[in-house]
Image (cartoon, rainbow over the protein chains, first blue to last red):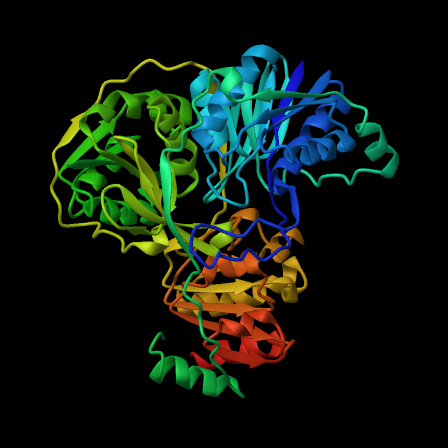
Amino acid sequence: MKIVVPVKRVVDYNIKPRVKADGSGVETAGVKMSMNPFDEIAVEEAIRLKEKGVATEVVVVSIGVQQAQDTLRTAMAMGADRAILVLSEESPEPLAVAKVLKAIVAKEEPGLVILGKQAIDDDMNATGQMLAGLLGWGQGTFAGKVDVADGSVRVSREIDGGTEEVSLTLPAIITADLRLNEPRYASLPNIMKARKKPLETLNAADLGVDMTRRLTVVSVAEPPQRQAGVKVGSVSELVEKLRNEAKVI
Amino acid sequence: MTALVLLDHEDGRIRQAALSAVTAAAKLGDVHVLVAGDDAVAQEAARIAGVSKVLHAADARYAHELAEPLAALIVSLAGGYDHIVAAAGAVGKNVLPRAAALLDVQPIPDVISIVDGDTFVRPIYAGNALATVKSSDTKKVLTVRGSAFDAAAAEGGSAPVETVAPVDSPAVSKFEAVHLSESERPELESARVVVSGGRGLQSEEKFHILDPLADKLGAAIGASRAAVDSGFVPNDYQVGQTGKIVAPDLYLAFGISGAIQHLAGMKDSRVIVAVNKDPEAPIFQVADYGIVGDLFEIVPQLTEELK
């Protein structure tokens, strides 16, 4: 069984995002970019399934600018076998990304597509669900545990009040939550090896997908900042302030 | 203009965040709600103030709010609606994007403010920026943050309940089991007071020092990602960008340093209290009241003072 893992190049999670002065977006020029952390978890899960003998090949896909090939090389250094870069000028929305991925799935015929549950830039949390809808496949979102057996996959999902288990007929979509696994670091020899792994480049237009955005960004602003309050010297002073000043107890 | 709200429920009760979604939808037009599940839940939905019609998906295939059948049902109903809305919780985030894809619509998740019928404000980059976006889709599909809208009154309405017929969808998913954290406490996302613990609580056993205080305040208990990752409490206690977003009247943070991802989940609380050994902890930059000290001394004192 083949596994396809889409990965996104985003502002590194350790960088504090800065809103551009003209309010048109968040500054990405000259900022360190990395693989979306949830996608790293998805890549790791796919590699583990290959190591267990469940999967035979792991194909990573990224949709975006030329530099996204760095992200694909990182995924291959972790252990993915080959990569597909779909070039697209603008930062595409989940709907367009799902359509591109549907075209890739038609070509690759994977048994599973594993995605990160959301990208940490636009925080959409939508692409996996949308791809599942377009394909008519089952979806195991916010996965904390994945077991593949006998043509189906059992997924433990993180829900609001605890966890839920569902089983899905293969092929299926899984989106990775935070605690599905801890992604490995790529070793130097593997980074070197990844440079020689195959990377195919396609154009979104060649796949017949309209990448036009449906959401126009009117403005991007800093959220209102909270002011630091006061330090109090004792518990009784705190209780007095909560009662009489803040009036919350 | 009419909006359809997917009302999610848990353990037979409509979630508080779904009531907030009703309030948000009322800003967009007349409100119809869709309830999947048993009759009692549909009757509960009919009593919500501001709801003018309840669509009850009573068929067994909808009982567990699985995305595959529910998204197909929403698509079959979508013709009569300009907006399709749900709370930005586990159900809404699972089901609505799938329905949106089938409708060829780009969904708008985590809305915190409605500018007009096409224009919405949503946080991006873990709440480090707020984006105002305008949709060109003819139908809008959105999830809304419960913490950003007041809950609609659970009583006061008397909407008619209409049973909707099931529609075909790919039979590719099956509900197996649900494991809910047992708690007598209020839901984390809608509690008036939240008592939260971080790595400073040191262990699963010591974390229980917060229990008597939470009892006293009628509070929900939350935790930082560090506390969850250390195994002190289950995953669903986590407050933060990758956990729950809360905005209670009072948020008490014990032994939480205040990583950006945690602040993203609680900085809209009305009053924040922080207790930490480290006077430089970033949590103090957002706290209205702070105490520098040992939480293992302060928590019992505070519990005692409130008696």
